[in-house]
Image (cartoon, rainbow over all chains, first blue to last red; front, top):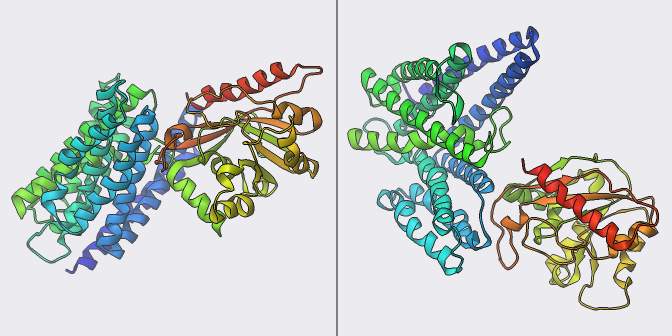
Length: 313
Length: 203
């Protein structure tokens, strides 16, 4: 089976799933009883609609190839960093480090992936960025809350640029098999992460009782995590034929992705909570900001990248 | 063409979402008066207004910045429909208002930054008196307080490059005129109306 045939089947499958979801959403919207129920269903339908758009963008960038996919993720990093910085208090003296993060480090990170310079893209932000940014901030001579300000910028950059860039970095991996294998790995990562989020939401809404971290995220429940996580592991295992993994290895990889994704969602909820907001932004109707959709991927991408790199290349 | 490019760039970098809190984007003659933190402010308000209002709304821009250089001047005059005023000469009181009066006399709307210069604070500083004189002279023009959230972070005074931080433009309820109100009292009330929007925008 050629790469194109595989992608056609995969995207066809996703469209099928979304079509079913759209039909269910439409049916529910016709018989909602209470006002609160109506609000939940409206939000559900907004989410499903946004999913159609996101899948379409993703499919187009896949069809256009590596360059377009890198641009798509660079834009994703840009918007998530913008959301992160917008909610984070900064001072005038942070302007230079922030400009460096946006205009130099972000494009540089993606360019290094484009030219496949692994040794540098793996350390650009955690080593050089982490040394240069505080130096630039210090040059401005403002010591107030220095460590706090520096760490905000650094962690924001880490999550939104460094971590997210590891998803398209999968395309640089040299995996035995035909040349398109890496695109399928990226597909695997994204579908497992997002399917896990969706199913945790569904299981949480249907059966959620036991809150895991009520102070940080009241909507995260044990029932949602177990039900959603297991569905995502199953979904990952069922995709073994597009990966270099055996079915049980694919399940193990999916498990790692689900676990990291859950932790990412939890940690970023804590950040939001500390800033007193519910969503990172308003860009994606029903979902909140772009970072609300990318929080799990941000934690899962580097781990999945390295697991695959160490064991399969 | 340039206007779409500018709006696109503004949206990409700083968002510039409009929030109509106490008024609606209606076609009425208005003076929008806002806090002033950066050179982005004019662009922000201009792109936050719907296209139908944008055509009849003229931002006041400082000639010493927007009048400098061919490109900037062209953008200010031809794209933003701006009225350039000279804030360096200290002429007779009210002399700077002459071009503003003629815009209002033609039935068009204005965008004013009554602080005069740019500040780096979240809340606006004391207002200059121009807004008071215009409000007296044109009693039928609605006075809309406008608050720009974040441009002081995205493009603070003394920097060369704006950084991407979402900025919001809040439009408040019209400030009512009171009979025989003293100038300073009115200006403080107008300033407070802008400052009050700051807490409406940020939860």
